Length: 219
Length: 219
DNA sequence: GTCTATAGTACGATAGAC
DNA sequence: GTCTATCGTACTATAGAC
Image (tube, rainbow over all chains, first blue to last red; front, top):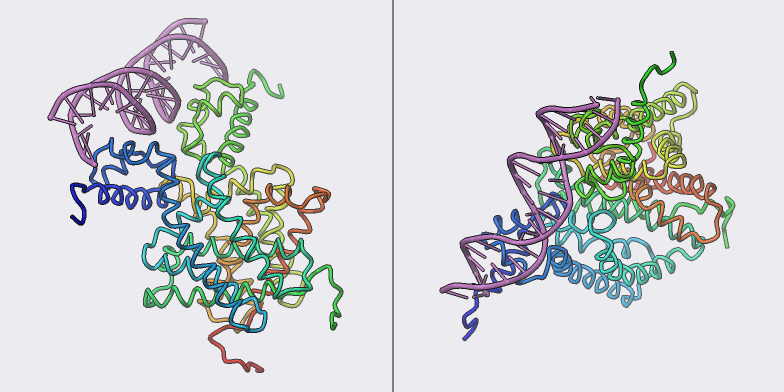
């Protein structure tokens, strides 16, 4: 009696998989339910049966990935904070970025989908759903960065976090292109090297002297 | 005989203005020709008369802005290179970013439109058109960064330029939100302060020690 | 739970009068 | 150069048989 009469869990996941890929690749508006059901090899009506609408499907696609990624972020961040290591930005950046690289090496399109949803696709109603998830993440990481950079003025820290997110998002969104351009590299190794370089770059940026501070700042 | 019988240049520009705003705000697929012609207060058929298709209109919208911005970038870069100043990343970053802030303070939606076209909207056929424009810019700025950072391995420089573009793009795309969040600041001043902070952040990131180098690197 | 069939709507593009 | 009217198509969503 493991799965009774239902092949539905399979249908539902096939729809989610196909939608995830197409939303990430072509965007929400450019993807029709017919394209999704064709790719998933299910009937057109199955989408509206399992999910109520195309937009609800988008939210389901998002929720399936965003939850685990954000949980992993908090897990890594908490592990660092409980380790008693000295305050530094690198472990915080690692906790923020690594989960995206991990999920990206499993399913290449996922980071691109999340980047899309961050500021581009999605109708107003869905935006609120996505933003809510990100706000707790932002709060926790903001506090962590604040501890590592106690002298940085609030506005400047806030903006620098935006720069970090931008560097991360663009890297995720163009990962496929970057793979193509890094001719003759082993695929898997590139990703982790990219993560390392990304952390190094953003750490240096975060640690740059604040422009509001004067040049001398020995406490 | 200044403008004979035609009110067309006005119609054409009104279409371009309306399309620019809507493409930037809602994306290409989510914007219909009917929304554009309604906003521009012109007839539906006018779009297909002045431009041949919706996609050709997108290219026209893009071309009107990308040309001047990229010319200004090269102008600023050339001026710096001819000034005889010592190699540094800050003036190169300024030449890359300032034109976007300038056009953004004239027409707020333009940077967001350009970010969209960079890696998200647009059909395959248009992608080639946009990419061509960017390739010369990339070549020139790559050479400039290379001069300022002679010891940085090629792959790492390339990736760091991607990080710079990401930080810039995200800042441009969320400028409106950032304005809202920087409560009680004078609007115009925020932008130029943001540019300054962005340059400071990315300059520090670019100058970070290369991970392939060992810790000691005194030449 | 899965299907077919279709309602109802919006779209891009064009023909042809003015 | 600008308009009205419309063709042909594609879409989301649903009703109802199985």
